Every structure is written in structure tokens, then in C-alpha cells.
Image 1 (tube, rainbow, N blue to C red):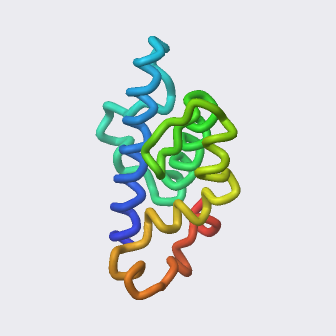
Image 2: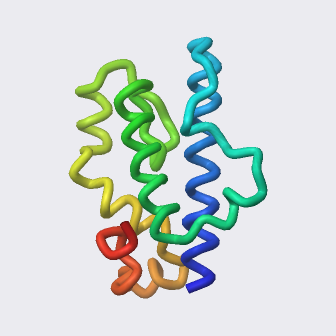
Image 3: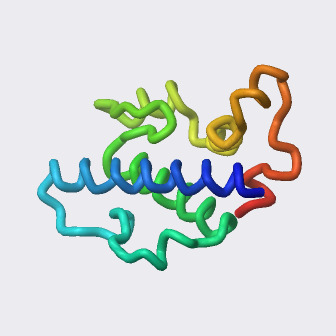
Length: 118
């Protein structure tokens, strides 16, 4: 589904930029979660992109106590877990990938859920 592919790609790029920004603030060397500079990496299939989003989100949570969905950092892991439980990541990703029309109509992604993408 091209619409879902575009949303996954946008979410992946946003997540990778957050990784780069927060890593640079800590003066860390370039990492595998930083945005790719190659054009071929941009055409990654949806399933792989969704898996990369989840992987990068886990990295942000673990290393920086940062929730990529809420777009904010926390001073303590307990604060992060209270505001954005790790168990809720699938729901947050489904919400991020659903269109405004789907959310307004109360529809979920159905066949496009992260469980089926990743």
C-alpha cells in the first residue's frame, strides 16, 4: 500500500534524525540508526522499514530515554515508562501509520498492523 509505505518511510526518517541529533548531543560517533546518505536505502521495503523503526525506537528509549512517538525525552526511565509504556509501542506505531481519515472514522490499520509488517 503506497500510502502506508510513505508513512513508514517518513516515520523511519524522523526516528533516524532523532537518533543522530541525540547521539551528537552526547558526542557519540555516527551510528547505524543515523539517516542513510545513500539513495538505494530510501527504497527499503515496508516490512524492513517497519522493523527498522521499531529497532530505532528501542534504541532511543534505551540509550536516550526518548520516546520517538511523543517526541520528547525523559530524565528517568520510570518517567518514560509511565508516559509511554514499551508494551504500547505496537499501538503507537499503528496510530502513527494510520491516516487521519482512519483515525477520525475509528478504524485501525487492520491488515497493515505492525505485527504483520514486521
